[in-house]
Image (cartoon, rainbow, N blue to C red):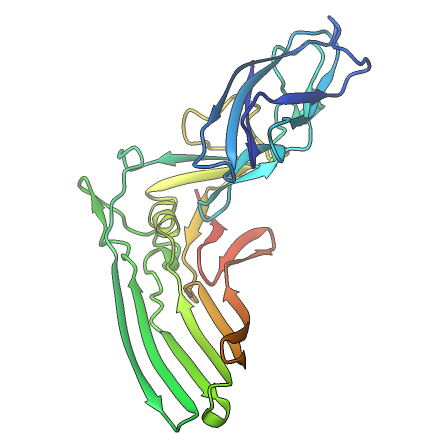
Length: 343
């Protein structure tokens, strides 16, 4: 068994140096870690992060561990593992230590009794019940309207006022058909039968310029506005499919009854007592991501040919918040809620 690990570096141009936890300064025959099949994905520039992949095998006969990585040509190197949240967003999480136990043919976690081979925080496996092998296609209509005008109040004050309206029409369950299969909701959960449509996205914009005394010596410029993002297609896709009707997905922890041990997975939909599939819903209070932005600039003429400026910018945003209520993960406002559905 071997393990391929991704590493992220801000600048990664050469071979990686690995730090292992051993009792001797130099590797011995009893503690022998080998690294092979290493390769690095080229980045768009020296300031961009890179990903390197390699295979580690412990050929020795004593326990060892990977505790870090370094490169003389990299500003920073860290070992990461892939992860996915309940909204379907993929990310990378750092790994502080990887055990390479005695007698192992690869770097796998050491035996810990009932959780042997289950050194994951969570394990999720999904089953497509549509026969489409994950295929899904849907359309969205995005409507935007904008009005703006400028008023000169007097010789000192200039106002710029605007209003924008945004509406993202989400596809409804029952209206999406792919290759002859219609994605309907789960009647046991009303929020999978209908998606809340966020229709109150009015974004005002205000700008002003004030010239003190009308002499062009000191001028203040300020602006403020509300801007709306989009509900991600991954969240919409999960809500359309992961409803225990079109797709069933199960999440296990190392102590969950029937949790698989690496590298085993389920070949069919599990029917383990007490294990229920996940359910993705768009909340009834669905709101698109919102950003409030404000900037202030002060210009002052010091001499006929010299001017000084000071600029300040501030912003605030409404993002997804995850709440754990009685063991049920619920993502409110923007993305999805993960509930337990009946088998």
